[in-house]
Amino acid sequence: MTASLRPDLAVIAGHVAAGARVLDIGCGDGALMAALRDERGVDARGLEIDAANVAAAVGRGLPVVQGDADRDLAGYPDKSFDYAILSQTLQTCRAPDHVLDELLRIGRRAFVSFPNFAHWRVRLSLLVGGRMPVTGLLPEQWYDTPNIHHVTIDDFRAFVRERQVTVEGAWFLSRRRLRGAAGANLLAEHAVFLLRR
Image (cartoon, rainbow, N blue to C red; front, side):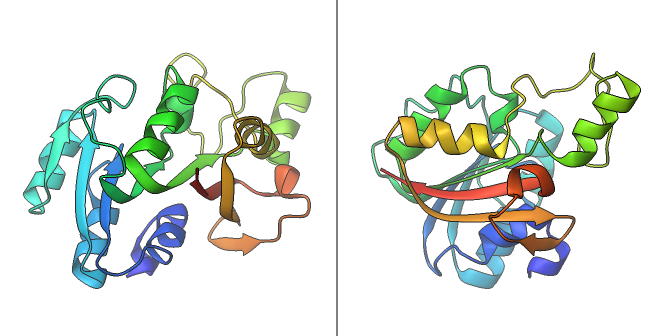
C-alpha cells in the first residue's frame, strides 16, 4: 500500500488504525483515502479545494466534497472522526492556527505534514543564489507558489508547545527515508506530526 504513496502519506497510512473514521482535509486526488479504504477498511471522507482533484477522488468512488480548510471546517461536529489529516496543506492556509484548532476539535487525533523550509538545500539556495529556492518538493517560483506560510520543523514544535498540544508521534523524512529527530530542522525535507489535545 504505502510504496505508491508520497512519503508523508505513506507514514500517515502506516499509523492510522484499521477501521478508523478519517477526514482528509486537502485530500488532493484521494490517493491516501483510497489506500486507507482498500487496505485498512477505513471510513474516509475528504475535503478538497481544487475541482479537478475533487473529480479525480470522486472518480475513485470516494466521498469528497469541494471546500476550503480556512472556511469550511466549522460545520463538522466535535470529535466526529478518529483522525483529521492535513497533509502538505498547513503552509497554504491563510490562518494555520485556526485550521489546527479545527483539526483538533474535529478529530480525536490529527496528522499534520508539511515541507520543512529550513532544510539545508533551501538555506543554501537562498544563501548562494540570493533568490527564493526552487526544489523538487517546492517546485514553484516565489510568485506562483501556494505556500504562504514558510514553516520549519522548529517553528511547528514551538507552535504546538505554546498551544499545549500533545505530540504523540513525529517522523522526519529526507526523500523516502526516515531520519532521526536530532538535526531534523536542518536535515529533513518534510515532517509528519501526530497530535492530540
